[in-house]
Structures are given as C-alpha cells and as structure tokens.
Image 1 (cartoon, rainbow over the protein chains, first blue to last red):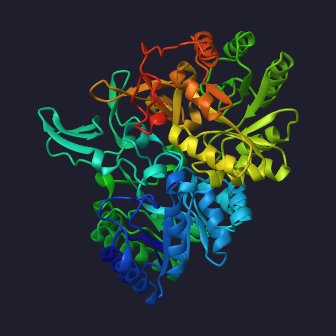
Image 2: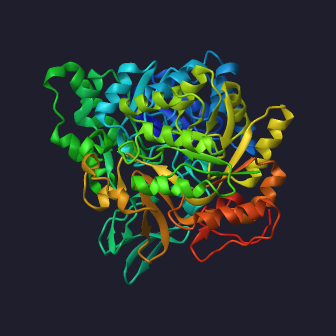
Image 3: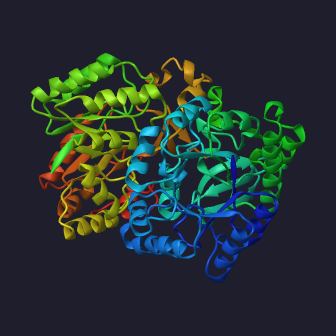
Length: 331
Length: 295
C-alpha cells in the first residue's frame, strides 16, 4: 500500500519525504483546501520548491482543492486547479462537483482523487464520480466498519485510500456543519473546522476552559491535558450527565489492520495531520514506514509492535488511539 | 410559493406517524416528503408502509416525494435505496450521491436534498443536466449565496425548483456512532430503538447550560430551532418555490398556518419562546438569531 503523508509546511514535507512517504499531500495558502489555518500551506516560490523537492526524490505530490466554492469565490478554485496543473503535480484531491467537472474537462490528463470531503461512503457514489469525472481514486470517510470498507472495495470502480492514523473525525466528512453552527465556518465553507480565530482559553477557578466563539466546549482540571476545542470532542451535559456525548479525544490508529487492508485491496493509507508539527510527521511516518516495510517483507508474520504503538500514542489526541468506526463495536 | 413537509427525522411509534399525516391532510401545505432519512435500523414503518402511505396521501391531493437515507454505508441500505428508486409515480429525493447515481442512470428526474453538497451554480447546473428537477439548499448556505446561484442559473437559462429548509432543528452531521444509544450505554447493533423515547431528539448543552445540539440517533441536529418565517417575503422575491417545514410532534398546525400567512403576505413574527436561530441565512454562525425582515 502507498503511504500518503500530510505536509502543512516545507519542514513537514521534507521530513515526510525523508522518512519514506510514497506521496505527500499539500494545500495552497487559501480557502481552497480544508486545512485553511494561519501559518500553514504553500504559496509562491516555496510551493514550486516543495513540489520539486518531493518529485526529485520519487515522492508524489497531491494538492488538496477539496473545499466547496460558493459563487463569489469560484474563480479562486478554478485558478487553484489551473495552477496545480501547471506545476505538474501528480494528482488533485477534490470534492466539489463543479470543481471536479472543471478539472476533468480542462485538464483531462491530470489525475483526480475524490477527497474524503466528497463524503462518498459506498460504491454507487464512487461509480458516479468515476463515470462523470474519471476519478482514479477515492478517500473513504472514517464512518465505515472494516467489513463495510471491504464491501466497498469489492465493488469499487476506483482505487481506495483510507485513513490509517490521526485525529478522528466522528462525523461523515464533507457533510458536517457543527463548526459553522457555532462559528461562521465549516470545513466545506471556510476550509476550517473550529477556526482558530474563534478559540479562547481561559483559566478559571473551575479549571481551564476552552471556548469556541464563546461556547464552552470543555473544562480541564489542573494538570489535565487540554485538547483543541472541536465541538465533537467537547464535554456536554445530557439530562444531568456531563461526558463526551459525541466522542472522546482520541486518535485513529489502524496499524494492526495493515494485513486486512492489504487483503481487501486498499491502494493507499493516508496519515491525517497537515496542521500538525514536523515532529509529529516524522514520528508517524517513520513508524508507518517501518510497519509497511515489515509487512511487505513478511506478510504472514506481521504484528503491530508495542514500541510502534507507544511512539504513536505519544503524538495522539488524548494520548490514546482507537480503531474507530473500523471496529464495529465502537459504533 | 408552496409549503412542504420535510421527511420525518425522528423515530415515532407507527400509529403516531399515521395519525400525524392524517392531521396534515387538511392543512394548507402542498408537498409531503416521506421516508427514513436518518437510520436504516428504524423499523416502525417498512419501505412498503411508506410507499402505501405515499399512495394514500397522493390520492388526497398532496404531492408526495419519497425521501431516502442520507448516510449510506451498507449493502442492505443500497438494496432499500434501489427498491425506492425503482418505484413509479413519485418524485424521489436523493440525500446521498448513491441515489443521484441510481436516479441519473435511470434517466428519471429527482430532487437533491440538502445533504447533497451544492454550493455553487456549476455544481447545480451539472446536476440539472443529470436530471435534478428540484434542489434543497444546504442548510449552512446564506441568502446571498442563494441569490448568486439563482442569478447565475438564470443567466444560463437553466430551470430548477428551489426549496429552502425553513423551520425545524437543523440536520448538522451524520456519524457512524449512535449518540442516543451511546447515552444509554447501548451498542448501535443492539440499540433497542431507544431513539423512539425522544420524539424530538435528546438535547445536549454546554457545561454552562447553554443549549448546543440535539442528538437524534446518528444525526446531530442544532440545539435551536431554525426559523425563517420572517424571511418568506425575501424568499419569494428570490424565486424560492418551496419552503420546507420539518415535522414536529406538537405544534405542527401552528407552524404551517404561520408560514401560510407569511406567503400570503400577512405580517408575521417569529415566536421565540423556544430557542430559535436563523444565522445561516445571514452568513452568520448558525446558532444566532437576527430579528426583523432585514434581508
């Protein structure tokens, strides 16, 4: 399986390449991608350099143009598609049908991947995107059990890429509006889930409070590790009970599923985390490279080593990991 | 301008569902959407029941549209979808791209529900060419975006009916996990249909008691009721053809009458005795409420 790694910055990209990524995925420094955060992403000269750096070392570059343009912004998305094509990247990762249509007609030679933001969780949807836009690959939302992934894989007209590691999105990606309900941006509209400009931290007698546009997302007692306030990971009160009503902060980790994913024909494993540090990227890519190499060398004897798991736990949300929806009982 | 009753989002006991639609027959509302859009485990009404109800309501003069599941993950769900898409005599609402694929392939006209991501005129034009006859604007989009999209469509001389979700708890997200079952510490595979205990969902508040979300099985809804009653004149000016009202266990008659009055040009005022929002219409955070008829 191909190892597809996040690169939110040039240092992260270099590290991903050094540690053995087969492909890196990046975004432009604007709202055309779903990690539109200050200080992140590529533009200008650095963009060309980054692409050359990776491709010179045999690593593919995918550009995420995976948000949904509204009418006023349409030309930015169109320009992004043209610019990425001119730069000779290996694939565009898109979600919006208008963008996919434009890219497939204007640049028929450019490989198109359906982003997880396209929210396609079944093979009929994949057929649609393949028929109309000739997508070569699709990234599956993280809501499917491993059995469901296998069913999709068995009938899919395109290659499949699945998330193997990183922050867990509990909602079907591409159709989640929790963020825009509370702030004015969702991943689809503004390229951000829980945009940073609306985040506030406040020390109070009741503990460290995290807020999103004034809404209290969680309270942490002294010493507790505080997480970034995304709404789905908040602690809420339901009929008197305060708990993680939607999901605990935890990271997805499917290291032990490498044999199974390979068996069902998954083409690529995606590491989440364009917003994460180069140190994160280094740690995660290194472990995954070792794991994938070890599997290839001895498929029948593969075991997820404890030291791999420990290394990954260190960089995980909540310092813990889960198989998430891949594991049916979790649902 | 027509009023539509959106698909029932909650799990109500069978008899309650039949009683509800019986009551709806005599109300000034023209279009009814029927079917399960949230969770395929729900069994109070079978697909056959929904089809039969559709026939009954259609005979009584309502335009009935069959709606379909928003998050389709299993082969069994695709089978149900195929069965619905093959039924004749009704317009079908697609809430997942699988339905768009099936309906477009069959060459039958269809409705794009608000879970189909249409954020610009290019996407809408593309879907119109595949057979979309009506679209329901994604709930997080604003009047300004709607106006832009419709203007571009007119310039291209493309025709489609526009529907806007205008009253009810907003569907905001769909997950693998059932939050209602989880609250009761039940696994999704043995949920015992616990969502039936919550005819209008289960509220989740912040630790300060601020209303945030409503949990409805695998669907997360807004904590406040979206209400565009005061925006009906603006919608009429924009050419919106249908205004969607989401079924509620109580007070549905009043809701329909108030929107009927609004579309006939009578002065109306939003009842804010329940927590209300309309932020999305104004390109603001969804949870806020702006009163008055500005925009």
